[in-house]
Image (cartoon, rainbow over all chains, first blue to last red; front, side, top):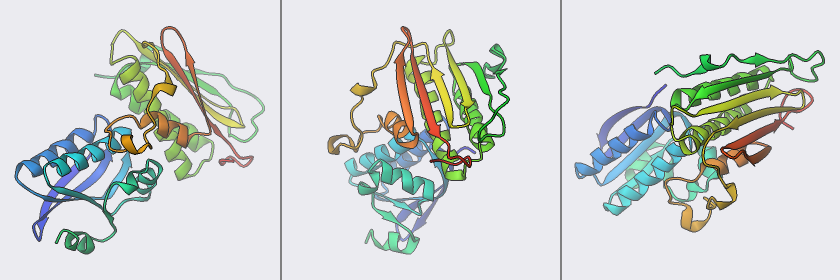
Length: 114
Length: 164
């Protein structure tokens, strides 16, 4: 299943709900475009809900990192919400768990931006 | 574009004395240098893991490692060149799952890949594929083919069919 992205606003935070796979050729480009779009609109607080992301490859991990650095370079904050076990394990394996702010519940994530 | 699975018919080499797997066989095929081929190799590896009785985590590890290796072959090795193919073989020996993926590219030196866990590399957008392959499989061997690179990925099987 390719990546689907739904966007909504919660207390000024742009929540991007991702569903599907983030892989080379399937979801990486969509994710990049969605982040670029949000930053381009001046959004400074971006939360990626990965609760329905069931697969991510090295390209997808790289895209998450690129999104993080792009946001930071634009003085925006990109955080992660609801990792599936597979994504959680991969972020730990690659030490990216130490890079991102990661939350299990949306309310805590939203309040962390204040 | 439909990928090139029909370019070479898979070959099955049956063995009469399986140890742990339901059958001992080797499947070999050649594919075009396309993302469709990557998906096809990943699906074939998943079937190999299912047939070996591996659990979901082990299937995920094998599928991901094989996908990364196939991407390296198609993208970095053959550079999507329609004149180049990747050669794949998969075998359940009863003791191991053995997946071999070879490209026809310029060659590759895995030792020259920067460590993606190093502090200075953590925020790089690329360079995690080989690390993931090595982390998710029990053995990984590289061989230079001149031209091309061959990767052999091995997952040990427990006597009951699971990982040791």
